Image 1 (tube, helix red, strand yellow):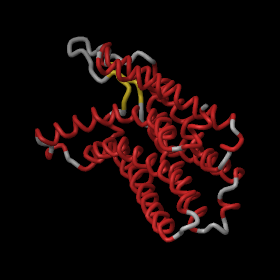
Image 2 (tube, one colour):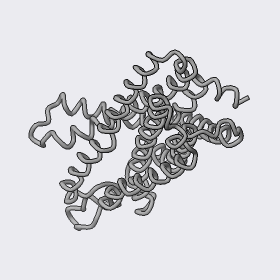
Image 3 (cartoon, rainbow, N blue to C red):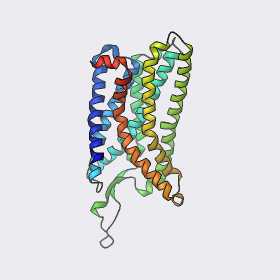
Image 4 (cartoon, rainbow, N blue to C red):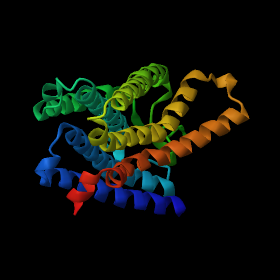
Length: 289
């Protein structure tokens, strides 16, 4: 009941908050900046995930088995979180690079921060994220994993949505590559760029006051993304690198805790950004009035 209530609150606040963020950016022309276009893209991703992904998760709390939504939705359920997480981290990296050029190389911001360029980058991000997520639905099926010993017929309640055992070795490589390319590497790049940006602002007296507030908001978005997604990738790497005969009771307990935590933080990540915008951005608060 507690988890159902929490998911319901997340669904309402996340959907309303992100939809309102999109409305505010569209309505106010002074909000039409490259950075806000990236934030608009993030909000759209969050709404899609909440609307299409959270209801079956909420249903699964009360009835985990059998899978009742058919194979097409099973494939979508597998594709959606991978696509949105990839698009989110690439978007975060993109607006960090945009801020880096705007602050550290101010002579070039008109080309690097133009709206047309931002739109092209966002489209490229969505296409790249879709391609990066394709291996997951390709290696996912809705299937019966248990047969009746007497009749050899599939047991109805064993119908699940997941990766068949035969395909797990291939998915192990996919997990490794996606974790590095779509989490570790972007977070390292983003962290490094914000360190450089911070050092640049510290030396500057003309830019620091005007740039510091929006920069703090963007850093908060990055930190929130890392906190919400780190447990997910940690438990995924545990699954990849710990062999069957190496699992101990402690490791299994850690894996279970990470799995439970990551499933909740995944949806928390979809509702936290609008809260950060309103708490940390004066322009967002003014535009919301």
